[in-house]
Length: 471
Image (tube, rainbow, N blue to C red):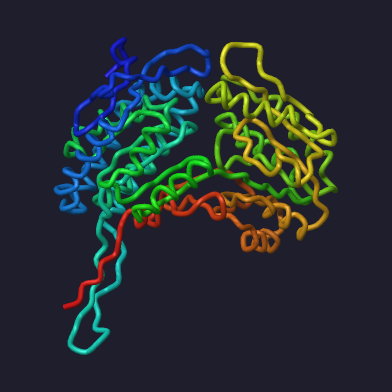
């Protein structure tokens, strides 16, 4: 399935068929590494949404009745297909995102395959209460059942991975889905639907390309019973409000602003090196990126110097890619241009003089808690550093933002680390590491970072509903 000139036109996947938008409208896709248009994708409208939801509803009648073993076999075959079509998926993803091909192949593709294989096994291990007699003469048991047609909306920072995190548990639980990828990065997700089609009934997995209006029409469609989205806080609030009108279930994985607490007992250089590698991965376009560093005042100056040295070694185009779009680049530049006088750009801060939306790896020191760049998600290759004097202050500063997705604490003191894991108001806490995910553990947040979990058995249960049966 090597990419050809024909493949430069992306198509929707509806009811097992690859189709343009009914209106014929398209969106031109820009390669952010070059700034050049390289593909086009459908801009789907109400007719396409109706067709996709109808196909998903029809497929649900049979897919929901399949056995867990049948669903497991389908997901395992899809995982094998992803491995077999690695070259095509790399080309599709890299064209839309500009990320380094080797990093996507080595880091993201194995995790995508693993997610499908994990949920293939989880499909056969749904937990449930044992049958029992809770009143005389009657036996109760609990069934776990699929919800129905799921609308799924995924972001542009990890297009294929976030799609896998949504598609695999939905299908494993017996649901069918209509997934809308981000309007700038649909290529790898559309290709996934094509290569998975041979192992699913038509309509079980539908991919609908389009813009915000497409997403609005999808989440409000009456066939949809659950909405799962990874995106911005604004998008999550809008979708939750729309879902309330029809009492649809909602699963939100939204923004982040991860605090990183660095105590004075760490190895300064190795800690700075590891955090720089994770912070600038994917150009910092990661809701768990360690971009808000809180460093003990006794090691602050030495740590800032070490972090700046390691940041300067990060090579745009090789170690990390461009910002996703001209708009995202402008958003990050606005934050940099609005820095208060007390903040200092220690290294980086400028757009590269080359094609594409590249920004230097940047370190900003001297920031204060009330600064906009501390309070808001940056979503770019920018790290801020601020001081703290004691453990209580560090934890207070860490929690003093509206987000609550992820955090990390770096210390040689085990008891101090455990106190932090209890006190940090986030869905994920790493100790002396940052950013690693595994399929067996949940990925989700609190506060304005949303609710619901991707990955893990919790992620599978989010796509089910309970039914009490009494005999």
